[in-house]
Image (cartoon, rainbow, N blue to C red):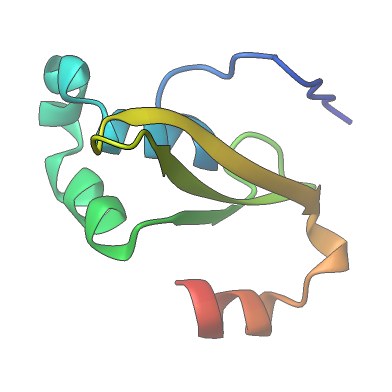
Length: 95
């Protein structure tokens, strides 16, 4: 299984945390043009939830973290093995 450690940087646009960074970061406008509709959905929902985006055995949910002035500071991401989450519940509440 693929391992992710604290501080690892996923490929841009892959994984819940990376997609939140792209959606809320105005400096990534070129990449955003490629996924404009999806970025708008992430911004409207204020989170991203995925199953199997980077690894079929991993599910993740991520939210943006903003500075006092509203500028994106980071993302907060939770990942678990996908078998630990019932697909029905995940889809019902987060997709």
